Length: 71
Image (tube, rainbow, N blue to C red):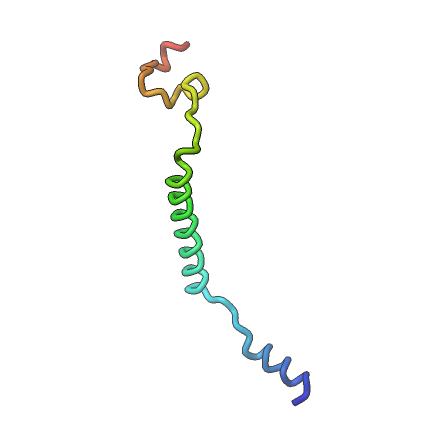
């Protein structure tokens, strides 16, 4: 067969993703990223540094500061 005939057949039967395939792929990637995040968070937890309360006062559980008193 000539090369042109193969090219025409490829164009005729070219695959194009439909909405169902795109949705499945998106869900797979999204779930994979979420699982990867929690897995890395668990594995790297000993290497994560503790942030000082002076830098992040909103994370300090012992401090009960009222916003209206700061004014």
